[in-house]
Amino acid sequence: MAQPPHYHAVILLRGVARGSRGSTAARGGFAVTSERIIDCHAHIIDPARFPFPDGPGYKPRPEETGTREAFCATLDRLGATHALLVQPSGYGVDNAAMLDAMAASRGRFRAIAMVDPGASDRALEALAGAGVVGVRFNLPSYDPHALSHPEAPRLLDRLRALGWFAQVYADDTQWAQIAPILRASRVRVLIDHFVDCLETGAPFETGPADNLETLRLVEHAYWAAGLHRPPPVRS
Image (cartoon, rainbow, N blue to C red; front, side):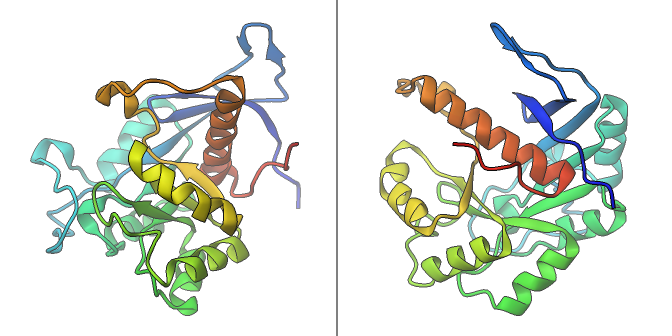
């Protein structure tokens, strides 16, 4: 079976990654084409078919909801080939809406699910079979202790064994506590909503190395969404 091409350059524009096959970095920016466009962070929110459960999480307004068919039509209109679906906090660990969209997508979608900290190996294997490639830890909107539960280290170990991502949504103060946990686990991490500081006014404390790390995380999201295997490890 032919191996998928490696995409050397990616950029992120409002959650949409673009890759150019065989492109090279140009001075002052990346050489990028629209040969493949992938939405790296999208939610399926369809309370008419899949009502919100009781419990924590953001419950979207009616104008923020839509069907899987409407989402696919939007991707078609934009010329996007694939999407990485991310479980919204309002559905909690009930991934039914997202899994339904994946089953109907014929391989167009991959997904980041939310699970109970003590989820069984069988449950994770079933999600993997459906096309899930990671687990979301949503600290501000769902569970501020998601990475400090007693079961969390074992869950992170199982994610690493599966080759999955830990997609983490956390605010500035929470990152100080969770960064050592994630580093110790050696799991691959995607940073969720990493531009929230633009809204909060938090000062930037980044340098060139941080910016390169951000691009690496975006590239991981791109591969997870469209090519379903990680890029090679770089030094």
